[in-house]
Length: 243
Length: 264
Image 1 (spheres, each protein chain N blue to C red):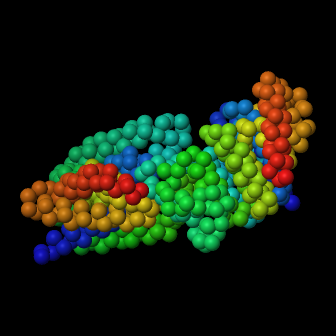
Image 2: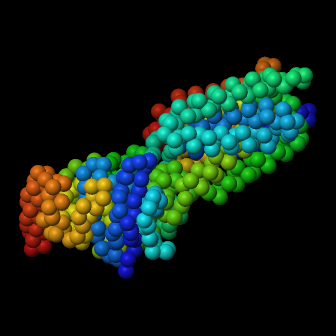
Image 3: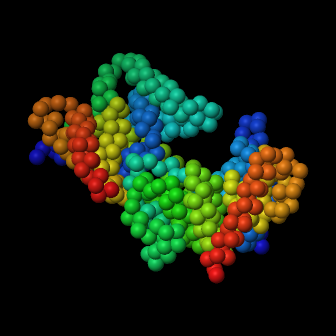
């Protein structure tokens, strides 16, 4: 079942294309990741798919009534707006306390319930944003570079959380990410952007494609090395704890 | 108490009540200059109404609304928003002043529109102020959660099925109404103060957006009534005295904030 699809969709600001002739789709329960260098239109594509930007040409179709859980990169929040974590979870619609308790426990913020959102650390804020997004039991979770600004430890914790949400809710996951090694390990479908989609497909197909290698080149080689290393490491670790 | 004092108290309280919740959004969304520009445009509206011998209110509403639309249009054409606001705001203020002085033959009391003349409002004004206040408070109450979500993150709001531009329009219309009814009370130069000061003072004591809006309303009404009282005692112009009272309350909140931060 297709949740969101784009057909030859383009976004143009003035004379420049931010995203050009994109065709793609996200299906039920699928994990799709958008990768690409800075300024390659990743975030624009995400905004296009969410509906925050209209396509200049082509079209974007969201299944009618699709419930989206959106995790933004950051909030335009400063200290002038007082808001507790609890109140933030109930935006835009109030949610039952039992559900709030459940998601706060899941992301490990149960003791921050009455804390001011502006006082949370970077990692805590990301988890609060995730908690709000999953509270309404979305069919698709959309995340815009969710691990930016987190340290290595925070990054792997956050991806573990997302994968937990994915299996718990059975929702699709669409995200923009810089963490190539994680992307390659856990995505079903990878979209490699550079203004247009230069290649897309299963992680292994994409990482072997000449377009991908040309785009990430050297960096990619290092990332894949890192990927294998982390993969071994995680695998090891898992075996160890399960034994 | 004399009737003109009752009218002044009712008018001041009504404007303060409408300005408070709107002022919270002005503070949260960093729209302070937007408020100023809308208020300055109101003066142009006054001039227009006088020239056409029309009632002031629709002229002011129209001018304030046109200002909001022009700022958005200029910003979309690539001008920085503070530049667009600065140019349009002072352009409107200057044009308004010139246009009022051109009203040949009749003598217009300019200061009544610049700093207000709350002691001269009639019952029609009081009724219009309260009608405006109910409209603004009702609109914000109705869209409250949506407005908060859009303020925190527009794309997040879109993903939840809201339309950020439509919510923004609620604030723009609300601002035009507040400016239109407040011009007689505090004047075009000081309307922004009634938006900003109670909300900023309330911030020190609030832990939720709802508490901040309610407190801002209380502080606004206290400033209006306190300022009216003080202006009678000292025989000072009422509009500026109301704003002085609000400034004093804000100053106290700044001093108290470090102590309150413990509970944050």
